[in-house]
Length: 55
Image 1: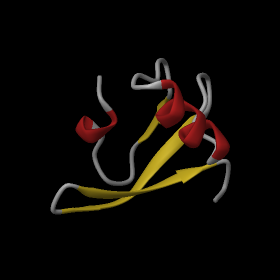
Image 2 (image 1 turned 180 degrees about the horizontal axis):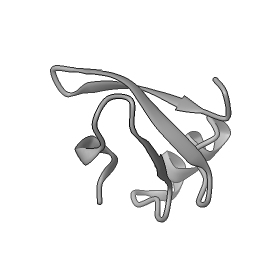
Image 3 (image 1 turned 30 degrees about the horizontal axis):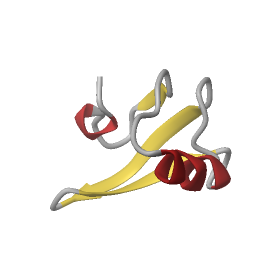
Image 4 (image 1 turned 45 degrees about the vertical axis):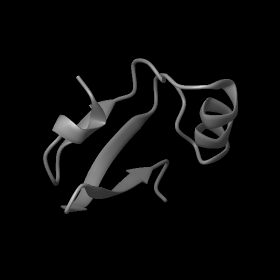
């Protein structure tokens, strides 16, 4: 399921990252890689704050 479907406070594991190579590389630089646990901290108006690797 897309990350946008995860509710505030819930944890999920990244299974797949789509997009162009440059976008995927940018996300990887921020810690978004397959297999990592993430938690949605806040969601407001389509914007999300996500905790990745305790950041």
